[in-house]
Each structure stands twice: as structure tokens, then as C-alpha cells.
Amino acid sequence: MNITKLVKTIENLKLPEICELITQLENKYNIHTLEDSPRTSKPTDQTQQLYLIECSSNKIQTIKTLKEILNIGLLEAKKKTDKLPQLIIETTNYKELNKIKTQLETIGAITQIKTL
Image 1: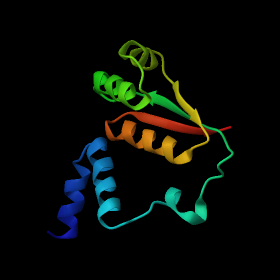
Image 2: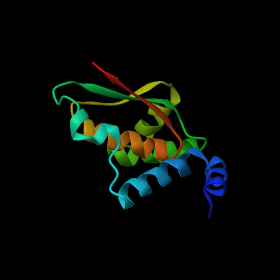
Image 3: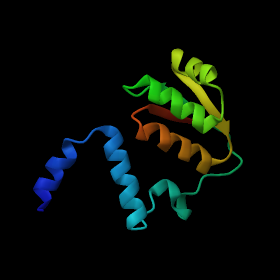
Image 4: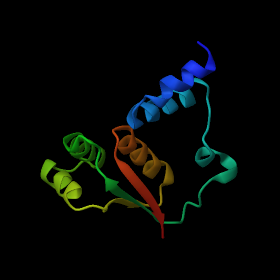
């Protein structure tokens, strides 16, 4: 497959598919994003907040994912999707925050990290 065909194929992917492609390429080729690089490691004493800005096109999938990630009840997860933007988690653990962000973005949700 030549590069032009590959680019055209990627252009037709949906955001969750692109996120999954990136994750698989990072894992397969041991690629570290700039955020994971030791040279740009985040200070561990800074509190960061993850906000859900927009649900995926399938709101039910967003609710299920929040329920699973945060270990909360279905009703509580639904409430987090009713009025956006919504604070999802506040932590000093950047890796945990980034993992949750990736899980939400993989299903098509839009998130934002704010540093306090």
C-alpha cells in the first residue's frame, strides 16, 4: 500500500478509530508521546482536573464508560453527562488522569485537562 492510499484511508476514519490506531502504533513500535517522555514529565504535586466537555455520539456508551472508569453507579454516571462541561476527576496522578482521558476519547468523547 502506498502512502497516498494510506492517508486517504485514515482520512475516512472516525475519531475513536484514529485514537485506537494511534494507541496500537504506540504500543507496537514502543513510541512514547511527548506527554509520556521523561524529559517532559509533569510535576507530581500539581493537581489536575479532567473535564468531560462533550459526550460521544452514543451517550449511553459514555455513561457506561464513566461508570466503569470511576467505579460509580449508573445514575451517578448519567448525571455527569447531563450538564456539561462536568468535572470527572481531580488528581495529582497524571498517568491515571491521562489513562481516563484516553479511554473517554477512544469512544468519541471530548475532554479537557486543567492544571490548578
